Length: 108
Image (cartoon, rainbow, N blue to C red; front, side):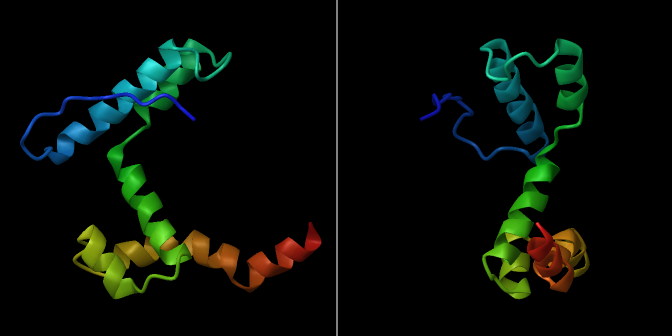
């Protein structure tokens, strides 16, 4: 089981702008602890700069769709105001699970 990293973030709610720095701090600690094997420090720095909390929202959106959650439930849970973005972020997942995905699965 991976080691747990404790963070004291205080008693108040996190500001949306504080989540990405927390993610990056966790990744830096993991990198410094050798969790990424022989990953080059320059490559790590470049990849670290691309990390954002928005990535997790997209991933959670896709996980909800994959688990069979309906659009209204996803919009409510992730506070989407319009169906446009959750459906847009689901387009690749929908293709993987649709006819093209099933055909590719048979070809493997």
